[in-house]
Length: 133
Length: 133
DNA sequence: CCTTGACCCTGTAGTCGCTATAGGGTCCAT
DNA sequence: ATGGACCCTATAGCGACTACAGGGTCAAGG
Image 1: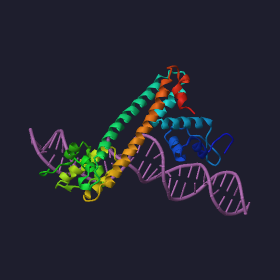
Image 2: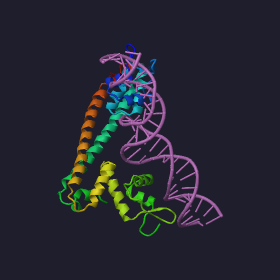
Image 3: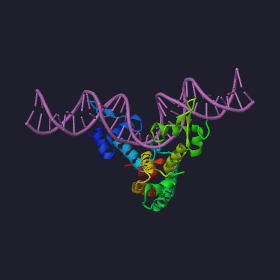
Image 4: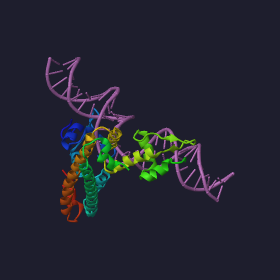
């Protein structure tokens, strides 16, 4: 691989991504297609490394690929107000809050169900009962 | 529709399920294929109603279709010990706990990111910065 | 120079749990 | 006889990957 450029495997290792995922991001145009070497290998430059890092970090924080696309677009318009960025982040936070609340409710239900299990036969199982109509 | 039998739409309404989902459950053999009328309509009996109710209630509690398949198999072996049922429920609860913990950590990260936003331009946006490498 | 093995390429299909569409058939009330 | 609500099958799409199959490329060691 040429000086300063990364092959897909190296890029993947540095961003904690699978090679297939990198190609997938290219296919869906989240990551721009890089130049190719004589042997048709993808050759990634520093701009790819930083863009993919951004994507992965955002994914780790639970943003959807569509949200990330929007964030990347915004990040490129450096003199716009960052209100829209703030809005995306807040909307995502609200969604996380909703999920946490849902899971807490779920957890309570599971708990009371499991508590009732008297470890007898299935016929008298309170868990099965709790799931039945 | 014959006496005491339900067409797919009626079954779906009673179990808060979409018609397509009912057919999907049949296709993946989660719900047994019912008898058909002369006009080739599915005719569901009470056993289908209760089985589908069980499935939907379990889905609402977040069990996977594979877990539900296992629960349904167990529910049919009425004189076995319900240990295995208990194990599935507890494994699921543990998974819910992991998800809650993950989301709480996420929420904290999002919060501190959003807190730093000073509503300037994108160029000085702390959110974009926080997502960058 | 040749081989080996790690890496890379494309294209396609699978995962989970549905959901949606197209293009038809049935049933019942008016 | 007609309209509209319901039903049928088959197939493809969603999101975000992941996993092949069947090849090509490259660098190091013998």
